Every structure is written in structure tokens, then in C-alpha cells.
Image (cartoon, rainbow, N blue to C red):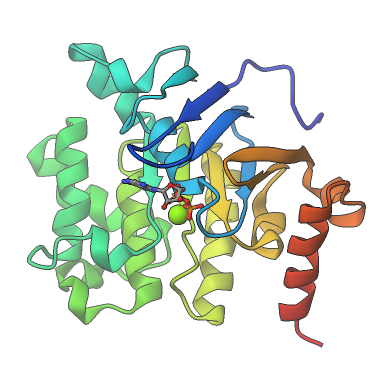
Length: 259
Ligand SMILES: Nc1ncnc2c1ncn2[C@@H]1O[C@H](COP(=O)(O)OP(=O)(O)O)[C@@H](O)[C@H]1O
Ligand SMILES: [Mg+2]
């Protein structure tokens, strides 16, 4: 299995630039690809442009220059009946599940809502929710709980279940473990790896921590001040980082490693 593979990329950003009003470009000529079933990691310190790239990939923002394509289509310009079908194939797991789940909605209802949007008939939804809860390692009875009654790790599993509800081919994970304690962090990373194995889903996996990205990604892009300073197979970057900034990220990761 080659790192880039022979398959056409599922997600492709080609020399994308994005500037928010008043600032320097948050992204400046960035290119990145995710092949089907593979994981591309994106690492960089806070403010380097990672979440901006996530929003562009998801079609929540339009680039100022360059192109974004998901399954050959511009995710920002999806219109008409095919839009929902394409969106179902492209999902999102956020950094903070507590902020992304409606506090007034039971956990199961949040997942059921995603199923409803996807067109799952009402009579099949409760069973589908229970199945998704089991898939992410949650006891289905927890579907009746409100977000405030669940731990951070459980909430992130609910967010993953909701993302999986539409049978996506790509899930954009923006720092999905950064808000979790180390124990839950490891469990959620294991879960994402297991789901990839089982469903063939691909990830754009974003983190400020190269040690975390390394656990899941096949290839990784290092983002600094809105530019990719290094890109390659994650094992190469880890063992022989070419750019001084990657070496600094690596040193930071080593500092946190136990022992
Ligand atoms: N909505 C916004 N309006 C103006 N500036 C923003 C906005 N979102 C992000 N930025 C700026 O863009 C840069 C990149 O931010 P972001 O993509 O959130 O980086 P990261 O996710 O790596 O922390 C930062 O300088 C940030 O302050
Ligand atoms: Mg961010």
C-alpha cells in the first residue's frame, strides 16, 4: 500500500488562500489531499490556520484563491438535491463536543436528527441510534441522557456516532481529543482507528500535537503561519523531520511523552 495510493483523492485542496478581513492570510497557498480510506494529518500550533482549513474542506467557507474539491465537487457551492447526498459523505467531529451538542436535546436525539436528515425512516431510527451507540462503545441506554449528564469522552463518542450516522467517506476531525483527559484521549484515538478499519472511512485529522497525529495519520502536513512547511509520510517526519519547525513540534511532543 503506497502512502498516496493510486486512487483519486477524496478531498483535494489546491493552492488555497484565505484571508479574514483585516488580517494576514490565515492560509497562504496550501495544498493537501486525503485519499479514500486513508488519514491525512494536519499539525501546527494554535493560530496556524488548521480550523480555517477544516472549514474550507467542509464547505463552510469559500477560498479567496485556489480550489477545494470533495469527490470532485466544490463543497461550498453544493446546491440542489445532490447537495444533501454529498454532505452525507463528508462529516465533522469538533474539538469541543459539549459546545457542538444542543444542551436541551438528549444524546440519542442528536444522533436521530442526523439520521432523519439522512432520510432514515422514523420507525428505524431508535434501532439505528442504538446500533451507532454500540459502534462507538456507548451503552445504548445513554441515548436518553442530556449532554450535561455525560463525560467529555462519552460526549465525543456521541459526536462520532452522529458523524457516522450518514455513512460518511470522510470525517474531518478538528482536535477531537484536545479537550479530553489523557485516558479518554487514548480511547477516542483507538476508536477512530477501529472505525476506520471497520468502515473504510477516511479522516482529515487535525491536532496541534504531532504525537497524537502520528497515532492515526498515514501522511502529515505541517502548517505554520498558514503555510505548509513540510509534508510526507508520518513515519518519515517523525524519524527525520526536515524543517526546523517540525523538529520543534517533535521536541514538544517528546517533552510530553511519559518517561
Ligand atoms: N472568524 C475569524 N475572523 C478573523 N480572524 C480569524 C477568524 N478565525 C480565525 N482567524 C484568524 O486566522 C488565523 C488562523 O486561525 P485558525 O484557523 O483558527 O487556526 P488554528 O485552528 O490553527 O488555531 C488566526 O490568526 C486567527 O486569529
Ligand atoms: Mg483550531
